[in-house]
Image: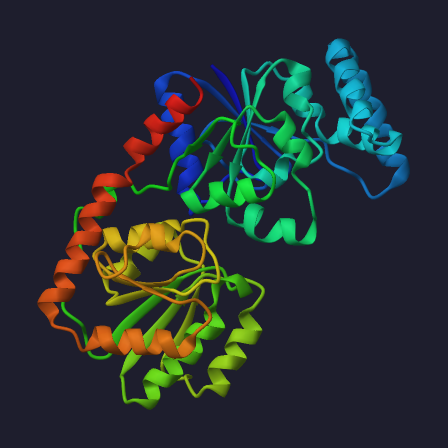
Length: 387
């Protein structure tokens, strides 16, 4: 089949979910093309087609639009169908011109499936698949379901009417889609993130170190709950716990979090590592005792899967799908969200537990991930998704 995947930009090294999916579909024999708005990276996983660029100069933009529309005249029936559908949905002439322009690269394509990698990317592109005779799929991820609809009420109403199949990365995400208007009758599939087993042949075998090594991999963003994490660690420090906490990642909240570290007197205990390559990140996990992910919400979180596969003891919040990822007191520990005291108490209790009990939990988590969340299973699930 000819499958077009729509993303804002090609997947980065850390977005293993997309790269694994693309490789699996190509290996199976499908023709996969990536349609993006920005192609500043050197992605080579499949063919990449760039969307028309919008110019801030009005004269240049008019010329670009004329050229795009002339190019679409060779696909006149598609253009006519797209405009007809846009009008029928109540869009104004200006919106129709804009949407035709930004979707021109896909309107020219011959595809069997168009799959929007994030549901938000389908907004203003709802009629493209029908116009070119393809089926339409969307993926429901954390930002799509947890954040964007709070700012844009009923934003997916037209998407749900036009979609042929929905992919969710967790049970939680699918339920959120239903709460935002998706009809249960629409076909859906839950395909979890996954890990490459070959990268986790060696695991972290050591008992807790002194000082305790604690790690979080996250964008420096409010939804990751890092402010609560730091407050919990400050409580631990006041109890005399000796630890080193590393935050791997970058983002807009760096200054705020850096100031919180200063205010909480954690300067000698907390390090902002910044963004690392995937291999370097795994190296840090191999030397980690406790992995923390105290996010307000997560669609699932691949980093936690990798931490478990590496043999780290994981402590997470109950936000979003995290309780699907880590099973409380079986493969890790789940703590009520937005409660720094509860988090500190859980960490302290874990540190006082018998090493044999903790080893059993770590082994159970590693076994579960390597048996139930593999790239091989994920690839087969996506092959089945389109058939």
